[in-house]
Image 1 (cartoon, rainbow, N blue to C red):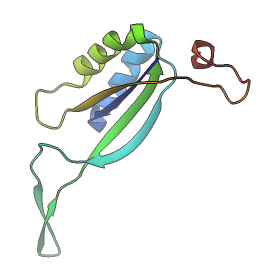
Image 2 (cartoon, one colour):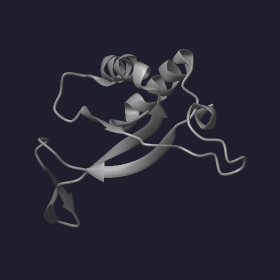
Image 3 (tube, rainbow, N blue to C red):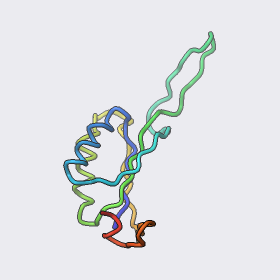
Length: 113
C-alpha cells in the first residue's frame, strides 16, 4: 500500500475531488495548510505598514491506496491541478506497512474499503 499526499491550490480541490470520486477513490483526508516554496513573497499594506506574506494557503489531500493505483492517481492529480505556474504544489508517495480499521479490527486491503 502507498500513501499519496498532495499539496495543491485550494481552487483545484473541488475538481480533483470529483475526478478521484469517478476513479473510485472514496477515502480521503483533507486539511487546510499553509506553506511556501519557490513562490516569491507578496507585499501587502495594513494600516499603512508594509509587510511580506511568505506563506500561501494550500489544501493537503491524503489517501492510502493499493500500489497498482499510484501511477493513475498521480497522473490524475497532476492533470487536474497543474496550471504551469509556480505554486501548483507537490505530490509525495510513501510506503504504508499496514492499515487497520478501528471499528472491526480488519487489516490490509479490507480496511481500505
